Image 1: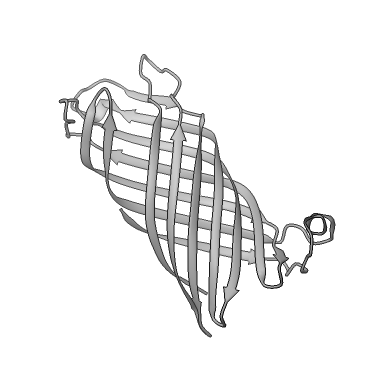
Image 2: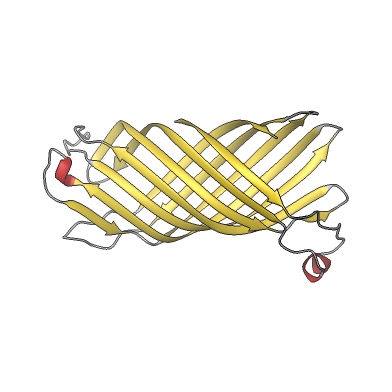
Length: 224
């Protein structure tokens, strides 16, 4: 898959350097970072199921928007640690309508709407004079999910089915190397993302089964 992403970060102030964890959470400096980020990606995915076989190269696109807030904690002279939390929304659309699996099962279009709470930490550390290393680790707690199966528009017929799929969680992490210049910063960032979602509620005898999603990628970007 391929896509684009953007992020807008606003800091209300620069927090003072701290020398201990107790000092970080007991002083006047608290939440000072706010970030809005969005992503859109499209391409093809592969599907695999023990009961209905496999389907390759399914057209797919997804979008995501998040709002988080955090506290910068300057430690070890030049290292910045920023724990954060917020809310995120993810939309996924894959359309296998007209396709058949390896066992002969007919495909259909699926839409997934997912709300979650991201809880993570960013670490930034400069090295040399104009380079910076960044690490990110995040846990995502799913709070609400809806799966819409468009059986009415598929060759198999039937009705449009809406299932509540509200139990699940995700993990993500990345490693960023940034080259800083006077005008802009250039960065490269390998990342990994993972979702594990449980069975949905049963609706009209139809269930969206538990599933795992693995995403691996490389992000190239410019920072202003």
